[in-house]
Figure 1 (spheres, rainbow, N blue to C red):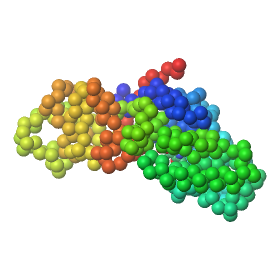
Figure 2 (figure 1 turned 120 degrees about the horizontal axis):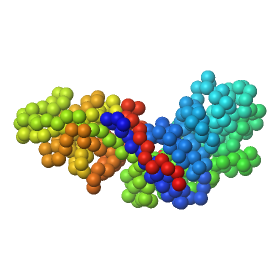
Figure 3 (figure 1 turned 90 degrees about the vertical axis):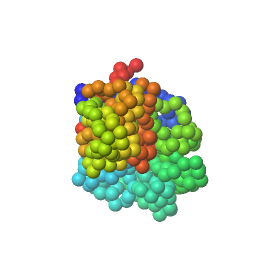
Figure 4 (figure 1 turned 30 degrees about the vertical axis):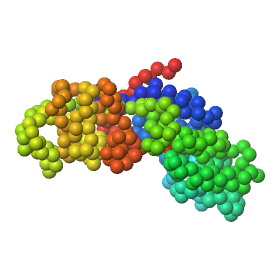
Length: 367
Ligand SMILES: *Cc1c(COP(=O)(O)O)cnc(C)c1O
């Protein structure tokens, strides 16, 4: 046990997988990049391996970590790989996304079979081949390289979490154009374009969908949460402890630069978590935490390792649990609420929770 804990409920994650799966009979690709959005890629991947068809990660280290932990299912890398690491693709049987001819030729030179999915550019403008005849020719050349084994093609939606559907349909059209343009070689390829937003708001076309944020219980956007609620549940809580309780006299300041000054006599608690744990400093004087089912406002600046809250009207004692994200009694702080305070999205809140926070897993029994 530790002062700061990220408590992850594997049972809820499993249930979320079941709910999301029930929305489409296509293949389920679990996106566990960035340490499963901070929640722990190894623990989660092992727990849901039997219920998913493939894992997606961002880089080679994440892929190797999964293989070393015993994951047997296919793993697709969505991002860039430095040439010095190409050799691990064959060694650990990892599938790579291929979005550039030069890179494909470099990989081919290695002399060992490398499995790939071709990345098509349909409008995200991150990685991928634009759907042009010239690029289709290049893709044919890549497919014929001796050591490159192309097994799939995919693309990524940039705006499917918005109400306006026009751009997403345009992306589908461009992807279909590529599917048609490569029909001479791609009959057996796995084709995929949908992310969580694509799964929730559109029919999943092609062979599978890549689910990330919703697998962990969040919706890709506030709009989606309101419009496409399917019953997935937040799977984690961020918890700390009260380290100290004291009285504050009228006129006393709190934390660096005294951005909060008591207007009356107050009781405050120091909480043993700060921005080095991933609790954003921008939440200073804005947010609240939950103590024994009650809201306690954050007073003054969030510091590196500690923050202070108002407990004037709360029954609280030393060592009591402090909930920063999740439920306490009837109250609930969602990752989206923290994201709103911090002017960001739940994805960044999750992936910012640092390694210093101890990860604890609940409901580990598979049934
Ligand atoms: C991160 C990512 C996903 C998952 O996105 P969510 O919004 O979490 O569903 C899917 N595909 C690609 C290419 C990604 O980079």
